[in-house]
Length: 536
Image (cartoon, rainbow, N blue to C red; front, side):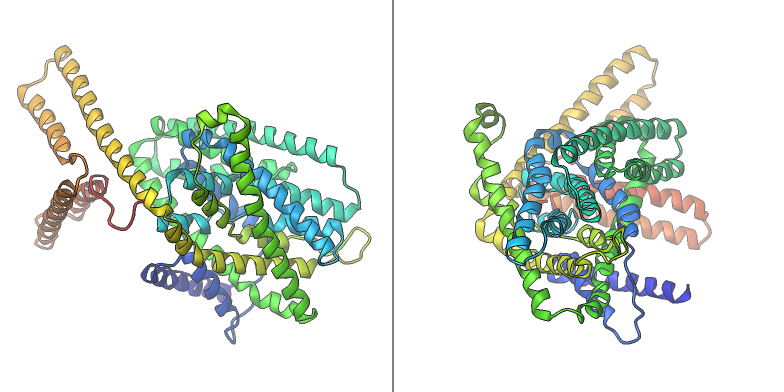
C-alpha cells in the first residue's frame, strides 16, 4: 500500500511538471503526459502497474463524459446533432468495418477479430483533441462538433465492442438482432439519463447546501452510467443525456454559491483525472513490451501501421461525403446549416486522436473462451491499440497546430470570437437595462429611502461603465489598462487587510470574508477583459 501511494505521489509530481513544460513549449499536455508515462515505466526499480480496465470504464469515464456534457451548450448540440451523429455513429461504424476488412485481407486475421479490433480503435478520444483545438483556436462550430462527437462516439464503440466480443466468444452474430438491440439501448439510455438529470436537479434544489449539492453532482454521473452499463448498455448515452439536461435546466435551480465552489471542484477533479489517465496509459508500455517479446517485431509493427493508416484514411473518406452529400440532396439542410469550407472539413478529419478508452477496452478482453482455450490474438490487439494511440496522439497531435495555421482556419476563429465578444457585451448591457427597468417598477410599489435607491442605482451605473464600447483597438487598450489598474488597487487592499490582521485590528474570520469579496471582484474582471492568450 505504501509503495502504491508513493507511485501516486510521483505521478502527481510528474503531472504538475509535465503540464508546466507543456504550457511553456505550447504543446498539448496529453502528449507530454503519455511520453512521461512511457519513460517512467522503464525507470529501473519502478514497480509495474497494470491499468485496470474497470478503472477507466467504470470510475474515470463517467465524470469525464458528464462534465463535458454539462459544459456543452444544448442549443448548439441540438443544432449540430446531424453532424455529430454522422461522426459519432456513422464514422465509428464505418471505421470499425474498414479496419475489419483491412485486418482480414491485409493481415490475414479472422473477420470477428478484425471487427473487434476495429471497434476498439474506432472512437476518437474526447480529451486530447479538444485540449489541442482550444489551445490553437478553432471556430466555435468545429469545437462543438468535435466535442459532441467525443461525448457520443464511446457509446457506439462500446456497444459494437460488446457485440464483437460476444461474436468471438460464441462464434455467432446476427446483424438484425444487433441493430434492434442498438436502437433499444439508445432509446432507453436517453430516457434514463434525462430522468436522472431531473431527479438530481430537484434533489440539489431542495438541499440548498453547496457541499451537499457538489457531493450529489459527483454521484450523478455514476448513477447515470453504472445502471445502464450493468443492464447491458454502454452507460455513455445516459450520462450524456443527463449532463445536457442539467446544462440546459440547471442555471435556474443551482445556487450561485454552489456554482462558484462547484466550478473549482470540477475543474480540479477533471484536471487530475485527465492527467493521471494519460500518465497511466503510457505506464502500460512496460507490460506490453514484455509481452511483445513473444511476437516478431515486424508483425507488431506492420499490424500497427496498417491499422493506423486505415483508421486515419477511413475518417477522411467518411467526413467529406458525410459533410457535402446531404447538402446536395436536401434543400432543408442547405437552408438550415451553413456550408463548411473544405479547410474546416479537413481539420475535422485530421482530429481523429485515439485515447485511453481504446486501451481500456483492449485490456478488458477476456483471457479465455468458454471452452478454455485462450482468447485469440488478445496480446496482438493490445499492442496495436497502444500503438495506434501513440501514433495518433503524438503524430496528429503535434502536427495539428501546423495544419490549422497553414489552412488559416484559426483566422476564421479570430473573427468569430470578435463578433461573439461584441454580442456578449451587448447582452450584458441589455441585461443591466432590464434590471434597471425592474428596479424602477419595484421602487414604485415599495416605500424605499432615497439613500437606498441611490446606492442601488450607483451600483448598476458602475457595472455598466465597466462594459467597453465596440471592440476597436482603442477600446481594447483602455479596457486592458483599466483592468490592470483595478487589479493593482485590489492588491493594495489585500496588503492593507493583511497588515490589519498582523496588528490584531481584525480577526482571521473577518479577513477571510473580505478576501472572498476581493477574490470575487478580481475573478469578475476576466468577464470584462479580452483574453490575451487566444480567441478561445
